[in-house]
Structures are given as structure tokens and as C-alpha cells.
Image (cartoon, rainbow, N blue to C red; front, side, top):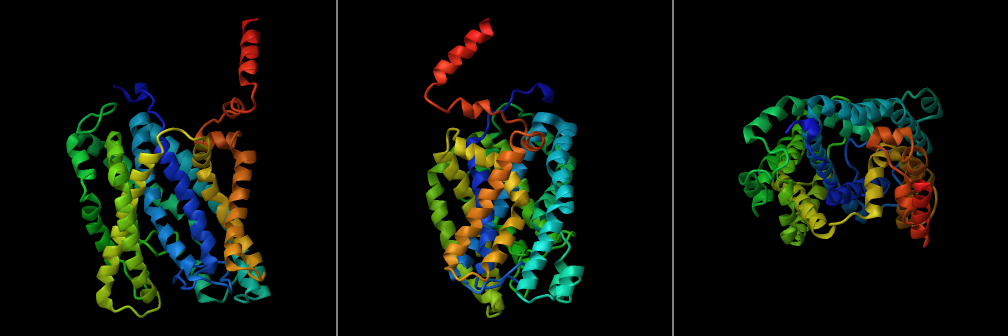
Length: 420
């Protein structure tokens, strides 16, 4: 069947829930960074609050699993778009939705973020008034990382994977045979949905985490240095999850079977995370024996894959129909991710001198960020040309039809007017 005449594939409501959850986890991760007790080396942040608590260290490191999830979803929907639109349509769509937002963000969001970060450094005494005005800093860490993609590094890496997929993707499709509108071959279902699949996939991931480990405690999963040049091992590490998402698209009709053991996998992922976190605390403090680094890498890889399979299974099990709130958050997730960081940093900077409980500060940071980004999405994006550019048109009538007890009366009046 020609690609242009393929039937429209139904919306994946379970994956909408994953997109919304991943977006919220990013807000939680960035909202907690000002209040963690163990600093992440190389992570340049606006302010380190005087109030800290270990629970925010746990929250930050646990929400790091959202990044592999993001790349898995990116690979899944990239394969879906390529199959539906062909190479030309796929490149046009990815240019519009990834390359253009990245370039616009570099020219708008990132300069604003740098200014807010510099404002935080000024308030905490990390730079002087003159350095702030000239944007010329003496601190070597600031000088080394002030220019980079910031939180938009995900878009930069995605572009690399998209280019590679356009080169390799057709060959992979030919190797499996045509399966445009039919379930994928059973051999791939057996590989992806086997009980041992997360443990097998963890092997190359653990090797990459081990090879990328640094004396400071950083690895491919934790490295957040701000640089426009991608780190090779980090690029390969997240590329595994993108490739997994591409192949997952071919077994999408069998995703429902993951729900049977989702809670078991989630429990195992929590166990591996807890063990990794104990080692990570020692590693970041420089007190971890080098012989434990491979164990830390294995636990990190297992946490990524077990949690990924668990989340895929949970949404398949519990999200079977469209929910307006989840659909709305999924639509808004890209915009929230794109513009949230300056707001998060600004609120954290202003709360740094306020004497209130640290938990309340965190809730204010996340609440203000989520509220402002959703409000700006509703007013500036959703029903505007910008929204059509990012995610296609959204019609107000879809939501108005649910409002009020007189829907049937209004519908009947509209039908009568149409007849006349």
C-alpha cells in the first residue's frame, strides 16, 4: 500500500499518558535541583538554596529515568511518522517540530535562561555586579558551560538520531518485510516481550555507563554538562533507547501483554534504584571504591530498563480510553518542556532568601512553573498558528461540546439552522 494512502492509525492514549508523565517528571527534576544535598558535578544551576533535604536527591535521580523514556517515545513516533509520510514528509515534519524549535529556543529561551542564571549567581555572590552587566564571568565552571543547548539538548540529540534513522531506517524496514498495516512478525514480539528482555537490554547499557564513568561520579545517565558538541558515549547511550522505540513501533500491537507483570517490574526497578542511589551518594562524595563502579553501572542500567518496561505496562493496563486531562497535558508537554526552565530558575532564585520550609518552596516552584506554562500554552499556543505548527490544529468545539447541561438542545438547534 502506498504510504500516502495508508489508513490513519488510531491515537495511542496510553503513550499520551507517558508523554504527560515524562513532562511532569522533568518539572519535578528541575524543581528539585536547588534543594538537593549532594551536588551533581558539572551541572550549572542558578542557585543552591540554603535549605536542602535528601528526599530531593532521591526525587531528582529517580526522575532521570524520564530521559530514556523521552527518547523511546521519540523513536516510536519517528517510526510511526516515517511509515505514514515517507522520507520527504518525515523530514519536513521533523524540521518543523524539532529543528525550528531548537533554533528559536537557542535565540530566545537560552539567552533568557542565561540571564536568569546570572541573576541567581549575582544574588548568591558567585559573580560581581560588573560580571553580571558584562556577562563575563571569572568562575571557571561558568566560563566553560555558559554557552550550550541547556535543557534543549534533547532536541539536538534527537536531530542526530533522526538523520541516522533516515539513512538506516529504510534498510531495517526492507529486512523485516512490509508490515504497514498488519501486526509485526512474531519473532520480534518474542524478543521484546520476553520476561528476560529488560535484563538482556541492560547489558550493553551497563557497559556504556561503565565506560562513561568519571572519577567525579558522572556517567552517561547523569552527565549534564552544557556543551553544543554531543558527548559520544552519551550519544550512543541514549541512541539505544531511540532505537528501542523504533523497533517497539513494529511490535506496537502486542504492547498490551506488558501489563501483566508491570507491577513486578516496577518493584524491581525501585529496588535496583535504591541500591544504585546508595552507591551514587558515595560516588558523588568521592568515597566509592572503584571496584563498585561496575555494580553501580549494572544497577543504573537495570533501573532504566525495568522502569521503562514497567511504565509501558502500567499505561497499557490502566489507560485504555481517552481522558481529556491526559490528552491536554500530552498536547501541552512539548511547549511546557520548551519554555519551563527560565520560570523554574527565576522562582528558585527569588525563594532562595525566603524563610519557609523547603518542601513548600519546592511546591511553589513546580506549581508556578506548571501553572504559567499551561496558561501560556492555552492562550498563546493551543488554538493559534503556533499550535498548528507544533501539534496540528485543535478545535475549541471539542471541549465546548462537553460544557453545560443543554448540549442536546444546542446540537438540535444547530442542525435545524443547517437545514434552513
